[in-house]
Amino acid sequence: MELSILKEIKECRICKDYLEPRPVVSFSSNSKILIIGQAPGLKVHESGIPWNDQSGKRLREWMGVDEHTFYDANVFGIVPMGFCYPGKGTSGDLPPRKECAPHWHERIVGLLKAPKYILIGQYAMNYYLGDKMKTNMTLTVENYKEYLPNAFVLPHPSPRNGFWLRKNLWFEDNVLLEFKKWIKASIK
Image: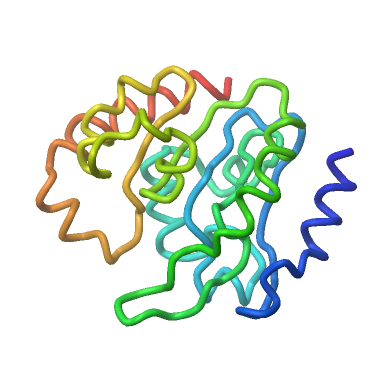
């Protein structure tokens, strides 16, 4: 079944009227943790490898895992809110297209045995937490313990978020320590 849906996703053209489709996802029915981010950036779009950029490097550092573990679909499923590169906006990439998540996510999650979630950024948090999300992403991340043990909420690891990280030192000092422990316990 998972091979069937992966084939369908790779052939998906739901957004063809708006951008150049090239879905980038990776998961297995055995994935222990589902990483749900925004959408592939240009480098990822070109390579077809999820999180194959500076954001991915920082995310793996935050997680305390190597590339081999990160790209093992039996450990981590990688399913962004938008599967294709949404294009360039005035200050970074455009938001993920809204067609992907409602069309695909429920089917993907339904294949997984008992996944945990890493929700990266406001789009994933809004979609998966709904009313449980705080008034903004920062407050949601500050209150990460409310979503444990099944979900961990994070800001986007983009180099563009350097200002946010410098402004919120509590994140690296406290949250990342707990995040690494959560990852280790979840993937053993």
